[in-house]
Amino acid sequence: SARAAGPGRVRRHSDALRITQQREETLRTDLDRALAEGQLRLVYQPVVDLALHRTVSVEALLRWRHPVYGEVSPAEFVPLAEESALISELGRWVLAEATATVAALPHPDLAVAVNVSARHVRSGELVADVLRALESSGLPSSRLILEITESVLLDDEHVTDDLAALRRLGVRIAVDDFGTGWSSLAYLVGLPIDVLKMDRQFLADVETDPQRRALCSSVLHLGTSLGLVVVVEGVETATELQLLRDMGHRFIQGYLLARPLDRAVLTTQLPGLGGAAVPTSAAGLPGP
Ligand code: C2E
Ligand code: MG
Ligand code: MG
Ligand code: MG
Image (cartoon, rainbow, N blue to C red):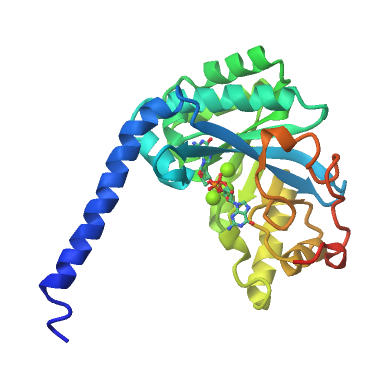
């Protein structure tokens, strides 16, 4: 009724909004100290090569255990950090921590992918920050991948110059959250990149819709034939895995094969590198 949608309802909405704004304010303030107080950590999610049956890289993902709110998602706090120069400080910490962690593992070919925010790339400090992390960790540049979003690439010349400089040093550049379109792929030709990471939405309806499946297959093949390593993110079901195998696809990341892992278990839980074997068919997967 009109009454139910009246003042009471408006009040509940504004209460909810106020609580959301309060949380955001608190998180924004507390993020400053989170790093110094050891509340941030990295977890590492394997990227598996279906041809070699083993983990070839891990993606470093930030985690924040807030003293009051508990675990806060990076999807919530990274955008807050991006409002200020704090994101570059955070980015430097992530680079240092991720390179040191992976350099210390007994896997001499394992690479690590680090997410770099647009603001950090645009700051002009990224090249120096990456060099410092490589130098102090001793990790060879060939084992570092920087994940950036597509919009950063299309943005300006200084940015692409810096990325090209990083590539000349041997660091690989990945385009994160890539969509499905042909036109977007055409944009990428000639840009300084090595890896394409397909967003999970790329898999939407592939199980049921033959046209979605054809699009998926074509984009994967086109990316590969352009000389890029293509990683499909967010693989959750055995059917998705089987479809990707049937397309001849190689590189996948997703909860089906491994969740993001704590640093302490990286020596024992990487699929094909001391952890479970990578299943050679969907039938070989452990049950639910
Ligand atoms: P992203 O770089 O695209 O990372 C992939 C996200 O997908 C991660 O979420 C990962 O946990 C999640 N994921 C992995 N497998 C699956 C799956 O099978 N199904 C589903 N539904 N999700 C899956 P997470 O860790 O919450 O990170 C969210 C985003 O936050 C990242 O997206 C990235 O954009 C940003 N982020 C995380 N760590 C950092 C960081 O160190 N620096 C910066 N600048 N951004 C970061
Ligand atoms: Mg990423
Ligand atoms: Mg992604
Ligand atoms: Mg994403």
